[in-house]
Image (cartoon, rainbow over all chains, first blue to last red):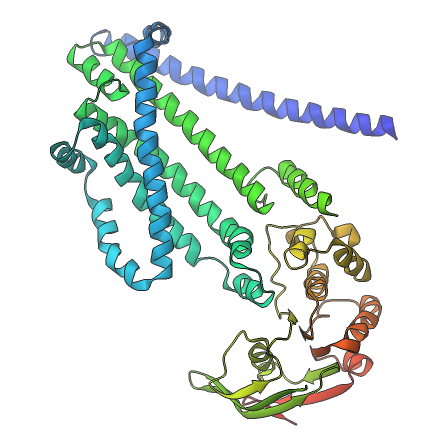
Length: 289
Length: 195
């Protein structure tokens, strides 16, 4: 019996290993393919002042990570954009709840939502530059980009919550918190996760654009702007690479954390991995039995 | 105190479902409601359960009573396994364990609704109603999709409920009605009327 289980486990591990090795190889191939394309483009253009090679950018990146100012700029940008994102998230959630609770509120604020969505981000940045300090401009722009996405998606999610389940909860006298935890949160979580993922990418890009135009001290946007002014193309490429990497890492981190939070709150696992779903569910409920 | 429904009216747009409908129900026992689909049984039960308001008329004897229900649809939380669905309405593990055994669902306790067959989902909905408990059980076709053997196994538990509670059973199955019901009310409609 033990041997059988051991063999089963070994075959499962080897399958997982093979799958993961396959994925890594595929990723490596795609990565190398685009590096080669980049290198070919560099060779064709053949002007260092306009276009940098992968090796030059990698070299500059290695140099940058040993400079304190680079880290300060990265942390500064992360803090400003993060603050704007959190403010936008909080406001979006609040406005969504108010919109669902009160039709008048929803009707009153709908034009504002449409207006924010239709206005080019550069118009907002220029206006904000007149109104406030450069640090606040970045926070404000990210807030403006994030809030409407969260707001609209959450309203959609709350409205699409299964009425039959809510009626069931009413009949079985589930209190408000229980209804939120067991029905609303699992129902809206796909909408929230999608909204966070979209708004994070958009907010990050808009935040960097705002930094480029408002040039606050210790920011990736200012570094990007200065690279352009002094024609330091390698720096421009290196900072762009940092911005892309940070955006990808942040999105993955936050979306994964949200999936995990969703599992913990409702023992839900439909959107997360099969195994963790069962594990969480069994652990939390067996304890009670 | 018995339950009395007096001169209840209910209509949806132009469709009159209940017109001056009156009915007296006992406090205990199994009362079966039988009638064609769409005659208004479910509307009557929803008004009794407080899920819908009658346009006019009154329902006496349901205030302060705990009402449990098996809906026409299973209405299980799809993101929770069966155990989670039952814990959502009943905190006592021993009660859950008891009814899981009664309904032969113990081995599926950790399965999610989509992993269960139609019959199992129906039993799970019935289990939720039973673990919640109550003074009035409204069971809208609770044995839909269940085979004869399982039904026979479950009948005694429904009869046990009826000792202290009122069980309102909607069914189209004559055998089921004869086997379980103390009173059978034949209905027709719309508008709903006692035949």
